Length: 309
Image (tube, rainbow, N blue to C red; front, side, top):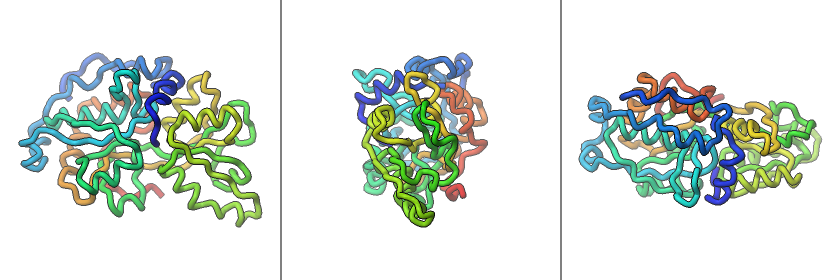
């Protein structure tokens, strides 16, 4: 999902954060704010692994850099702990930095709007993209992925709203107003399934897509929308903070999340091997613990797996 920097700064207050050499053991995310978690370094001890770096194309090894387009949103994926400095932090950022260390590369990062990144991969503007990009059948037609977490789609409501306890079928949302991020898999899913209400003889649900997560949360808090659809990890973080006043309704559909590349990119074998190296040496587990996303751990990275059924 895409968000504006100003909103991200505010959202960070509301959201909880939960080889090479091993620094200090990662602190549990529970009880720590996202800003506090961002200051905890679990990546600097990672070292280059020559055997993995050798999988890179020769021209990339010579250049020593990789161009990354990254969407900045809210914890735990990517956000600005200090919007004045505009230095992003989050799960996506830590994994990308750790992979770059294994590969001996410097990341040339450009923060970009969510909906612009995948097209920019095809045009050659970026070598790789991050933004909690879920692996879907539609995206696999033009994009290759190297997976590193298993996140997906979920729903949340105001804490005092008892109409829903868990969403297992979109027909449960008939007659409600659903807020979500513009250009996301959530918006696509909701719009593609709108006919479920008519088929059930019920009033259709309304989808309102917003360009930033702060507007979605505000709309929910003010009663202008009834339900939010967003990432499992993001909604879980949000509900863990009492000031947000939201209640997570559980998982709806799991999706692998990964680095995004243009179809046929020669970079994918090296990135996959680097992620698997981080899994093996414990860095990966420390990153997930830092951001409170242990439930999204994968045992191995895959290249362009099929969408979860």
